[in-house]
Image 1 (cartoon, rainbow, N blue to C red):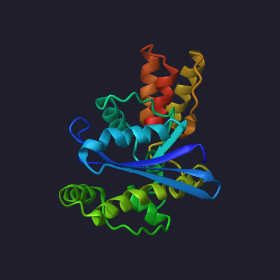
Image 2 (image 1 turned 180 degrees about the horizontal axis):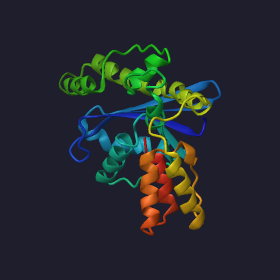
Image 3 (image 1 turned 180 degrees about the vertical axis):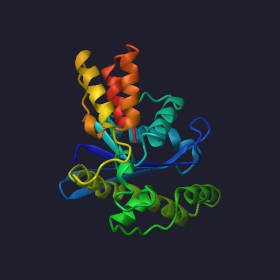
Image 4 (image 1 turned 45 degrees about the horizontal axis):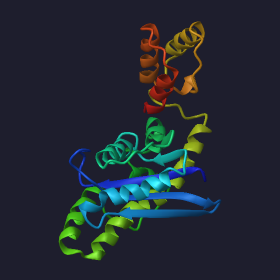
Length: 244
């Protein structure tokens, strides 16, 4: 895991065009047992570009990054804010989204929800911080008006612990993949699998994914694309990696 950058962001809202990134935490292993976390914080909304540039310098050192639900939120948000700030940014070629790997199995594991807090509780992880992302935004705007650095510390602790716990959650993926008793609830049907294998062989297509663990939705999309003559192996792998 020393080649993986773990990361999480805090923003002022959900709109990538009008909201700003206010805090990024990134972490990586500097040795087998030492995990280093670096935080980038905007003391004002005007500092977003400077913060993004600093983050980019670290991201460029890695070929893979890891998040929790980052494919849907963090990655597209970062890419858009980089572009709007005039920063040329090429994200790592591999994105390990732990949420998407856990979600198909979370009920079998006994979890009612699949947010990060629920997974942490399942793993017996205790957090020091007691706020959520919504409250951190409120505290940030309060910080901008008061410059009370105690508020900053509360916000930074929340984001810090999100990243601190990602490697622990990462280990759960290994357990899931090696537990033969677990099967994703939306797993590809036997009929789908046979037909997909037939189409792949007929069209001499090789994909990097294990078909038997593919979702029904991903299988349907790939089959539909092949039947329409849209054969793009990179797109097929992306469909599988993006399904959850």
